[in-house]
Image (tube, rainbow, N blue to C red; front, side, top):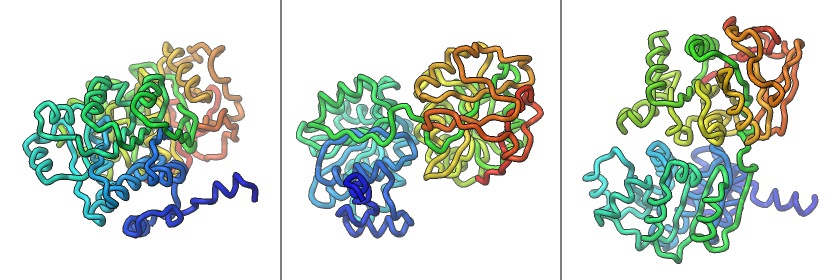
Length: 439
């Protein structure tokens, strides 16, 4: 065994990391025995009090990568921890994941997000929570009203930092940082590393250790990706035909709130159990939709990009991009909702014949050509094929697998079932759903 192999094997389980036995007991109860790559690298350094920059995609176990070091240090004498995230859904997701550990250690947590009662949040503050989990806007509301103090924060986590900057939270983050002591430990996690993140880290962190478990922009490794060229007015019927073939849980992304509402209505009219989640829905409605989706009360959840990083449902087998995102990086975050917890997933994107540039931008980011096929409404490939992935041969073709660095070719008959009749067979693509994926 060479030195690199020894290093890789050093933390092959949580018990070798020096983690508090109470935390280990909860991990054991949850049947979590082996750390993910980001946990493997981040937890030991986090426990030593080092500043960290973690570059990792969604679904890689980041919550425990920063949560375990924070909980353990608070149980050992640190005063208070603050976790800042971009969306309400993500805040509640983190709270849910850390709650069993915090309870075992006697550490109280509080969540501060928009749409929830300020009065109840002020009541929670009076109970002196040791961990604050907050979105930037609502935390700034409390800072302006002087209902919360961050003077005792000794551990700061900025999760999904790139998303927060994309959403325009830079002024709020700067204000939050101005209220926190400079002597602190900072853990920053991001799926990508734009220049603004580099500047933030340089200005606010102390010689941070950078941990990158996948190149920035890499799509989830176990997600198969496929693109269907379709005219705008045929998207709805194509969506319905695809979901009819799929027996598991489906997440559909719409570019707009109006579109999400329209899609949800159409799916319910077609006798699917569908719910919607976007910024026009109240906090109660959004939580109800997400919880119903997690329980299986809804087969389909229709969302805008506000939820692209806030949905942690292990059993999502299929993500459909009804509309392509405006920002190519959102494509990576969307499809990262499937293929989680080391499972395989499938992502299908709809593109109109005029969206060649959108596709090229996505392919450039993920460094993988997307395999394309046409809906029957498209007589021939209408996009600029000279700058796109090659056509599939008539004998079959593979889908692109994110993070593979290229497409893989497989026989067209390997999956058995034929594709929906709503998709052109001009190039005889292999079936989407020859295996019925269980939700």
